[in-house]
Length: 173
Image (cartoon, rainbow, N blue to C red; front, side, top):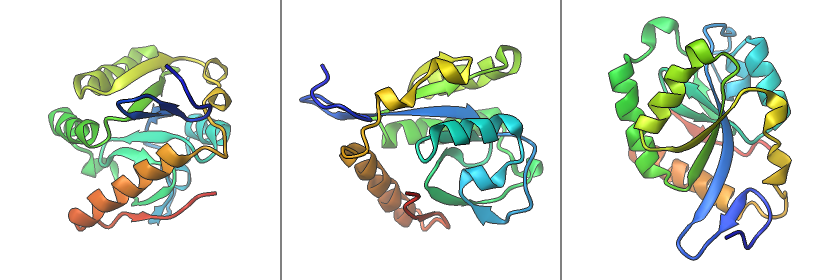
């Protein structure tokens, strides 16, 4: 039941935050620290981040979920987690952020299906789409009603402080 327009579905039990997600790329920039859109040189990621502006997630082989308005340290392919460890990171994130509904951008099913299945195994609510035009985020975002998204970012900030992480929270818009 949707009682509020925007990125949030208000229900009696919880607020839902719907965000598009795609897998990271081996094509990285030389930026040492930055928002996800600055860490990658991939045309696929550039198109993805331009389409969804400040509302997306990159699935990183090192960080797990990388939110669009949080700065992360760059990493090399040598630092990537094995699939089993990445699954454990994702399970923890799924438990921390139960309000997330992910829409997985998978333009290459032969390689991308693995990541979709990994998100499902981590118990995320996830759906798949293959073309950027197939998921119109504007049907979910109403810029005056971002309470749930802002609450999610505050939650991430608290969790990162508890972990004494190097991640910092900064507003993107």
